Image 1 (tube, rainbow, N blue to C red):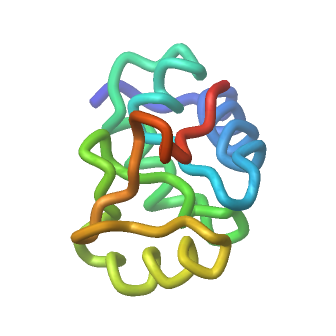
Image 2 (image 1 turned 180 degrees about the vertical axis):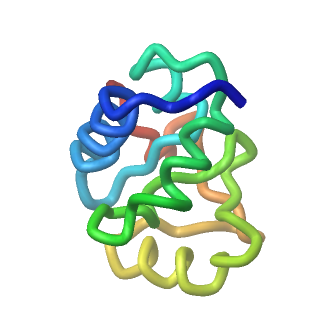
Length: 101
């Protein structure tokens, strides 16, 4: 992975901060909005610099939470009114909770 700049980190942090309660965004959504080449860069930034962010609102493109955080992440989302079916958050259709940047 190429070196991540402070500007990229701040862009990701700003985007994650802007996701309202009751909504989610994918790593890819954030990468696109920040002009990053890969959702993995967002994942790396989130893993290293997101403790003060609403990290639970960032999920995979499949609508699933991070495997190692699934129980905690789904509980936080449920507290905001985001309901998952079979561990998957609806990203398309009339029940979609996907945030648009």
